[in-house]
Every structure is written in structure tokens, then in C-alpha cells.
Length: 407
Image (tube, rainbow, N blue to C red):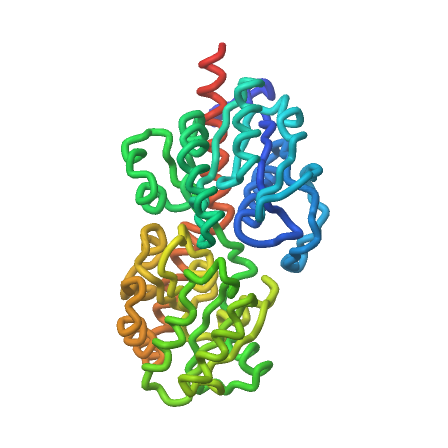
């Protein structure tokens, strides 16, 4: 029998590992938001054999969120924590950053990052290194002084970063284009979704959290997960509580997971509406504790009225096979297939929110089938391993283009 011999490619013909720098304002031990995404992006590329260095500021110590179990705060890739003489909120000024960004194939900026964005741009120009960035959101602030400052930054600095980037990665393209319609036909814009650990966030015993909280299997439960500080008032938890007061499902409960300066105000609102025993404030929970809460709930709710670019809690819930209700905001609404794995309601429409809540808290068995469809979608589109493959392709595409440009 004749056999066809296939000569394996020589090592020199294989794509070489890339040297990638991630620049992020926050990073574990502040385990949330942008820092969480930066960690997983770095981890995925490290596991694919690339040389990763994360540049962030020295930990200030005032914020700490426990990591998931099995995730140490020592990393298999390099993390450089630079001195920060001062900070503007979560944005540290790290003057030593540009000199440390020499010698990389690619700089990946996590935006917004006042100071860090400008310094990464400077390094990109100095060392002829391609710069791409993930657009997590636009700088916004409710206090007058910061609102003026951020508005000036968005007008003067943001265009510089956008114009110089080799790729603009949107966690949801619809959200980015709603903020920047001029980018609609820009070929540099790509979608690079946030992801979820589908092994941690997975279906399981729905009674575990209920037993711990003394709640029976027969009790319908809606769940909110998010920050309760004034900067996150847009999460609209007060609107959710008012909507829940309209729900005509006996003994139904609303669980609020999160902590912050708004908690006392929200607890007072629940008391005024006669919901003191039915709205449970569970405080801050670690990532390890969240899956049990998602599994225990009949539905998870993201009732935001603005600012949201993605809604990570939605895919966390769907990964646990729990359906969702979300405000139909640009970007957020692309995560939910209305009537299939969840429901979309107009932002701020408390009557529509109440109707969706009542439907899911009454028809609990149908909700289980919706949740299973959501789980299937998350595995297909939002598992971190899927995201990693897409991201690696983007990196190589940019580096290849840049090499041709300067060859």
C-alpha cells in the first residue's frame, strides 16, 4: 500500500511567539471589570505560548476583591506594578510606563485609562510598536468637576488615541458605534467580546444557596448582581425594587448582591414599599460564591438606564442556565435573544420590567428551558477559550501588517 508522507513544517516556518504588553489601570487584586478582562486576555495568550507582560500601578490597598478559587495572585506571566505618584479615581499616573514598553511586538491598551492611554500612545510612537485598545466604555461622571474634566479629556485626548490605533476592539460593536458613529465604516473596528469561565459559571444544584439562606425550593427568586455605590446609580436598583413591588407573585423574593454607599437608601426604599422581608441584601460576594446564587435564582436582572457597554452578569447568569431580563441598551441588548433566553425591556420602563419579572417568576419551568438555551449560546460565543482564539488571530493580523509597513 502506498503511503503519502507529509513533511512537518520546520520550526522556523511556524509563527513565532509574540511579545505582548497589556496596559491597564486596574488589575488583580482589584478583581473586577477591566482588570478581570485584562487578566483573562493575558492568561489566554500566555497559554498559547506568547510572552506576556502586564503593566499596571502598584496596588493602593484601598480596594480588594477576592479572586476565584484556584487563581493565585502570583501569575504565570509577568506583571509589572509601577509607582504612581498620584491617581485620578481609578486612573494612576505612572511616569515610568513609556520606557518599559520598549521591545514589544504589540501594545494592548485597556481603555479608558487617563494617563495610561497617553503614555502608551507615546511609547507606540517612540518605538514604532503597533497599538490596539479594547474600548470598555467612555469616561463619564456625575459630579460637576469630574464631568467637566472628563468631557475635556474626551474632546482632546480620545481622538488622538483613536486615530493612532491599529485596531479598535469593542466589547460590543453596537455600543461603541452608538458612542462614536463616525467609526461606523472604519475597518479598524473589530468586536472582541468579554468572556466567562464556563467551568466556574455552570449549571448545578439550584438549592445550595437557597438552603444557606433558608429559602425553600418553592419560593420564586429574582437576582441582581452589581455595585451599589453612587457612581453606579445607573444600575437602577431603585427602579428594580419599585418594579418588584408591582409583581403579583406571592412570597417571591428579590436578592440584591453588592455593596456600596447606596445600600442604606435602597434598603429604606424597600421598607417604604413594604418589601423589607422580601428584598434581601446579601452584600458583596466573591466570584466563587456567585454561581450558586445564579443557579438558585429563577431569573437575573440588569435594569440599567445608561453607561453599560456589555453586562457581564448576563452571560454569567446564562452560563449557569438561568434566564435574564435586561434593559435594551445598545450593546447590552445584543447579548439577549428576546423570548428565547431572556427578555429585553425599555430602559427605565418599570411597568415593562415588572411584567417581565412576573412572567419569569410565575412560569418557572419555562424559564429553565430558556436558561438551557442561554447556556448553549454562551458555550458557543462567550467561553474565554473561544475569545482567546479570536484575539490571537487579531494580534497576528496587526503584527503582520505592521511588519509589512516598516519592512
